[in-house]
Amino acid sequence: MTAQSEGPGSLRLADIVTVTVNPAIDVYVRTEALQPGELHRVDEQILVPGGKGVNVSRALEAMGRESRSLGFAGGSRGRWLASSLPGWAQWIPIAGETRLNLKVMEGNGRLTELNGPSPHIDPESWELLSDRVLEVLRPGTWLVIAGNLPEGCPVDGYRAWTEAAVQKGARVVLDSSGDALRFALEARPHVVKPNRQELSEWARAPVLDTVDVVREAQRMAQYAACVVVSLGAEGAIAVTQEGVWRARVPSVKVVSPVGAGDSLVAGMVHALSSGLAVPDALAFASAAATCKVALPPGAFPSLAQIAAIERQIEIEAWRDVLWPSS
Image 1 (cartoon, rainbow, N blue to C red):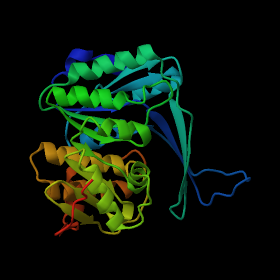
Image 2: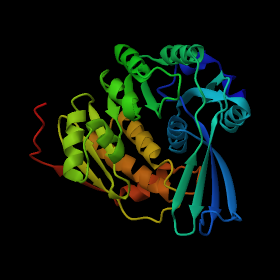
Image 3: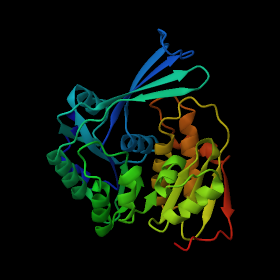
Image 4: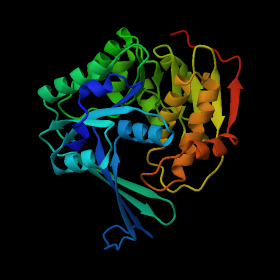
């Protein structure tokens, strides 16, 4: 695969490394209105490389920030994925086919997603990727672990990577769900980015309003230095041991919401690694996510576009919020 040509040694100098265990090819089609059971003539068809970590690296690239991306790729789809990305993406080849996701966009802005099955990951491939991840870790590295774990991966795999990163002085940013998230939290990542549903699954309790979000995010923040909960059009909330901040975002025309959460992650990494405080990082990241939804599939916002929206972001500090006792 062409994106493997740099070799692992080139990754050791990367300040930001993203890992995508379960990448995809995202196929976007546009039709005026989706009618189940009917034949549709689509107005547009776009193929873009996808997967959370890949999107984070692509968002960072649009911000002018270098990163390196690691992951699995297999079959003809995996070859297409590798050929569609520049040299910052490196892949461990697997026997199965990289998944294909169909995303149907309608004239009213509604998005219907049909995500394909993930390939099985064999133990040897997992070990190869784990070795590559460990090779790039050093003090000061930001390691973004994003996405779910396909069948065959150890359920505590992200925890092992997080433990290794913390021991080496790297900072882990985690964007996952389910047991992968639950286990990895035990290893104390630096930043965790759940959405409302993922936070609810972790809490094993409904998260219905911002009070619930803050309460459960505070519980999660006992395991991570910073928890950022993405709330879609409602903005985002950041929680640390020092405070709670709410970002309110302007209303924009939604073109494609896919990748907004990944842009939020990229924005937090870019801002925090540049020395910004959490409230300022939250404003920048929320602006990046807001910009992303207004762009066509596969496009990510530039610093100039983010700056234009950032001026409209409102950051509210919540005072006198009680921390949970357990």
